[in-house]
Length: 348
Image (cartoon, rainbow, N blue to C red; front, side):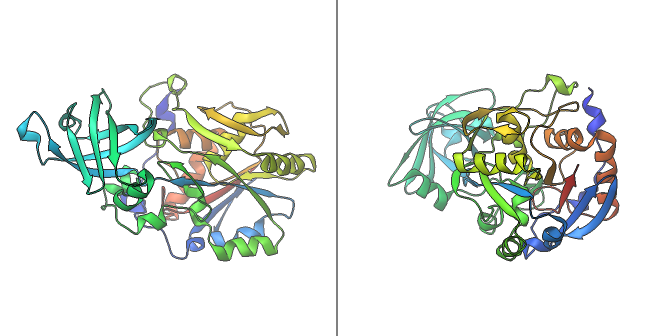
């Protein structure tokens, strides 16, 4: 299937550079049985049933964006040059594979200064990045939290610079397990007030984990979508979550993942229709049109980039023509797009 089928034109002005406050005041597009309604996220409890189960991703985003300066290089022209690093894969001990900009400045053997307590050596330069070995005083992640910035998506960073507000804004209120380099952004619409309202209505929810990797940022470069391969990501579903999910399925309740990350981990581990087991491991599932969904009967998600694996997933869930209809409506009604934008609930 040609990637061009998943293209659409989005006005630049609809790209959200900041979230709304409060979080639950964002718009919510409600789709069910070919009908579209324009709501607010705070209306969510009113359109759910007591036997529905919301599933959240409790991953926590690492402040994985670092700016460092070359302080030791055989090429004196590189000294004091600034380089941007995005930590992508933890390889072993203190070694990380990083995407670097500009890559040409990351010469093997260079020493990089990030702060008085955080340095790194460039061990090896590769085609798409470099391997860094970090040296630090104290705890690595504590240094990262102090020195690093949130890895908000490139399309936001084209509009404005990353700042300290993003350390709160780009983290869901459920974030617990450190490991992502991108936020499960559908969860960003949920605040304490909305959660309390859901609890009052008897709406159940549970948590799974999928640490979001570089695949979120990487565009699909193959003309045929079936030639694209997703990056591997680590996920977990614990025993308690598996029990409540299976019980909901057995009693006829709807499983509604909050975000494409939750949907992907659920569909990765399903043994058969209406049954999952606890899981910890890796997945690179790429959901494309024709996929038979075994767990999810609904999906809460933001509005995604054209020609992206996420828009392809949405198109697989509701159908390509329906997805284009939904997005056309969202553009006409001036919904805010992408990570800090508005959301949708898609029900089968």
